[in-house]
Amino acid sequence: MTDDPVQALAKFAAGQWGVVSRGELEALGLSARQVDRMVARGHLHPLHRGVYAVGHRNVTTEGRFLAAVKACGDQSVLSHYAAACHHGWLRYDGRPIDVTSLGRRRRPGIKTHVTEHLEREIVRQIPVTPRLRTITDLARTADERTVKRALRTARFSEAELAQLPSRITGLRAVPTASGSEDFVFDLVVAAGFAEPLVNAPYPNSSYVPDLWWPEQRLIVEVDSREWHSDPLAQRDDLDRQAWLEAKGERVLRTTRPQVRRDPHNFFARLRAAGAPYTRSAQTQL
Picture 1 (cartoon, rainbow, N blue to C red):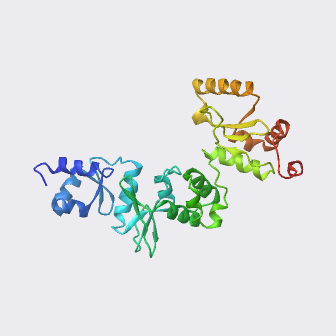
Picture 2: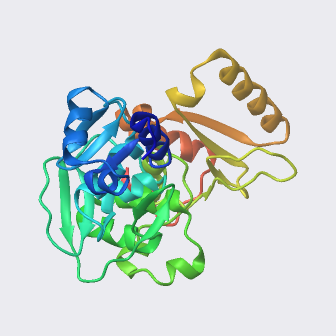
Picture 3: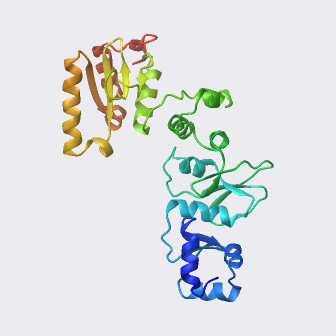
């Protein structure tokens, strides 16, 4: 290592989310005594046994993912729920991080899984199970709603879907863009209404309706606080709705809490607007 080990170490760690293992420190030429001294001085912060954050403990989610993998050894990968989050399908909620290894490695704060066949790829500097393996593993351990959200967000190709078990592809892999859209879509279909198009581009425009029955000229927009609460977004929504209504479309706006609070009223609005159904929704509601 150079004359300034702290600077060299910081440069090395920058390429891997700010975390290093003791083995990597030794490969850089640091002795056990030097490592202990850097921990005592606050240059290294233990995250797991033999894994450290460099400079400060406040590492990113990716840094915590990589630290968990490093803590479980070279024959380990991020997997299951954590892998789905790293692939961008789900939002990490702080639960114990899933790591799959060829051998059992119990570590606090890590949910370890054992496999006889390790599949891995590198995604943004982190060893992780490939997409198909990730969704398959997730389906074995997570509830249906979580698997469905991941499956829809992943946007698998037809070729990829053909490689998945029917119990997974049967979860309706429509391309919803949020958990709120998931909830409303599933409720609409379960009530007997015909499946609407989901996030299908509106002709000759950049607009993408949430749920849309083209023949009935009916659109449902599932608003959320995240995307529709500020004044500019609300103004855009009103302008877009006026433009659609001028084209003969009927636009129903709702929210997940509103539908959850009073689904019967929402279904009544759909029927009044002419939403088609595959069996008598009247007898269901």
